[in-house]
Length: 429
Figure 1 (tube, one colour):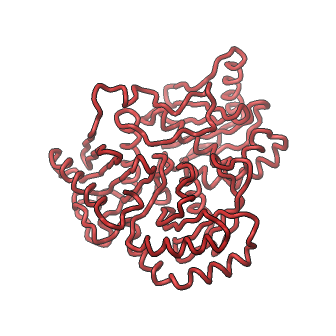
Figure 2 (tube, rainbow, N blue to C red):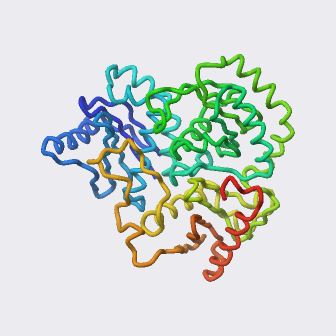
Figure 3 (cartoon, rainbow, N blue to C red):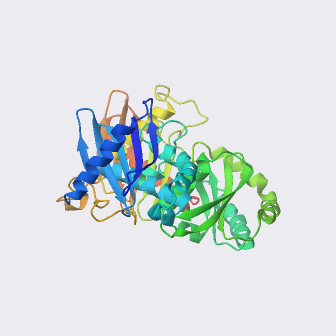
């Protein structure tokens, strides 16, 4: 799905940046000014412009701290205002992550802020690409409002190495990522806002690959005005250790500590690769009719996603659906049913304004229904989808089209029990 994103200053209407997703022409400046002018005209009459529709597209306006205005233009489809607002909130928080809230509110030096915002383009583009996902946008945390995780038998042993390392660098915030997904993290890392966990994972995932990086970041909820140092070291291919720390120790000292603490774990780290891209241990045998699944723990705000559950084995009936197609189907199904039928686990952003609305869905909330909905499904010529709510867990499963409708429930329930009973699954359980 193609989209335009416009970012302007509210007071002066000065464009800070524009981004687009898909094969689109650049938006002309007169049109950009007109879209902002409509909102300004409404403000002068005590009217807040939230959204509108044309014959071909939908437009949404969202203001932050009476300083920054985001405008998004998307085609008419199944994406509700609720999920578009989630997208815009994440985009603003990604701006805070790399620029800081003070500079975005004050906007004293527009040119400098524009330059600094370029560092956020990778994260912003990744968030926009979620509207039309590819193999490079395999993370779901931004959509769900939870941290992407991976389940592996080595997580307990890795945690010991991680805690010793974070303590040695005088920090309590550390995690191990594999393909942008959390394998293990310290208690304080898990205590961060779910959107912060998601954006940090995306930042590391979209950064240019290097052995060691040191980036100043502002945590959008916990510390939007005082920066931390995000130090990322690539332990092996697609596996990184991340720590949030202060001005000390120096980068040279950090490199020595990393070698000291992580060199003994190389054999352990190499065994983690066996879980990719499946994202769970190979001894868990998932039903062959399943093409992919999303498991959400709504209490812990964590999500386990596998779009290649039979990786390494001959996949029957899966050849007709590419990875990007499965990602698109899974995201579309989630956006269609969560909010409208099943409750969302997303935590509201603290940066939304009262007049701009809240994070509530733009339709009848789930809690006002006469009875709780526990299942929802959809069928098409090439696939079927089922969403199940069981206690704090939501399981969204993508099936081959040949599976009978009455079998999807039993298969999903067995899959959920299988994923939760394994002793190594504490990261999602």
